[in-house]
Image 1 (cartoon, rainbow, N blue to C red):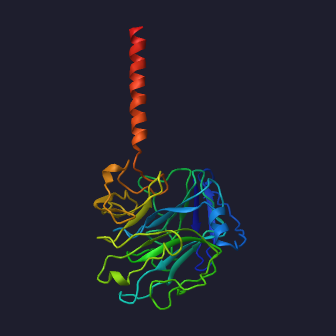
Image 2 (cartoon, rainbow, N blue to C red):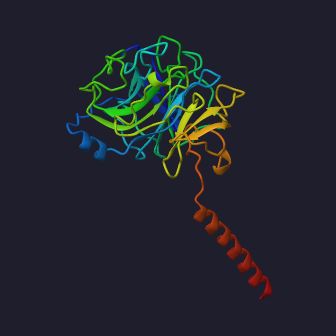
Image 3 (cartoon, helix red, strand yellow):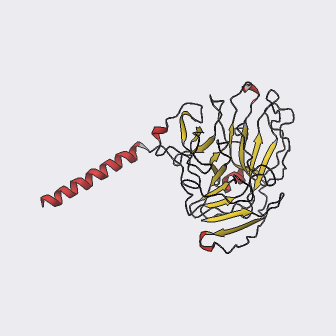
Length: 314
């Protein structure tokens, strides 16, 4: 497992990283620039990175986002961006504002193809591992999302999370100047790898916006709850949104609330259909087992039993 932590620069974060086999020996990693991709289509086809899981605002202060891609591949040139969707009728009214961005230069996916960026509950103090812990093959970045301020940056509000290339924007930049829910071009990036938008369930749903579909990907409709988390099925890649039951610790486990659990179309989903009932930071996401795999498993079991019986009869 590779661990990374910030070393205190509030703009243009500097990092120190080390592997599980090199604890105690901090190895500086040099960042390299990634050439700008001119054509959006080329950018989307040439890269295979995507967002796999986000813990938005649990009852405790810990949050995270998880990305998935080619094992060992560099994330140079990529940026994780959070865009507000609070329109004129909402309390904030800053639709299209870039709330936060995190530069991923210098990082790589772990040997299992996962990268987990986890906020610190208390700034400047390394947190304990997640419960259950991340897979040893995951690259884990341990750092506050917003250095110098309260360490979390993802609130339960209408917002869009995007993984982009060639980012040239800044925090506070307004991409929807008239707050009408339509992004104004030109946008400050050259390509979009993935995006997912959510809308807050409040008193003004018509003024709550999401931009994932405008960026070529997906949005959740207004649901009957404000999701604590969004994640992809670990096999099919389908999106789900859910509330998380109050964890006993900020580090988990993050058990999904079965009564507040929807698919990407806003239809209720059943936790019992999945092969787990909690988020999996730094590990393979839970999924709905395919009926065929269950059948094959049953047939394999029957074959083993039949084979054993024949050996005993012989």
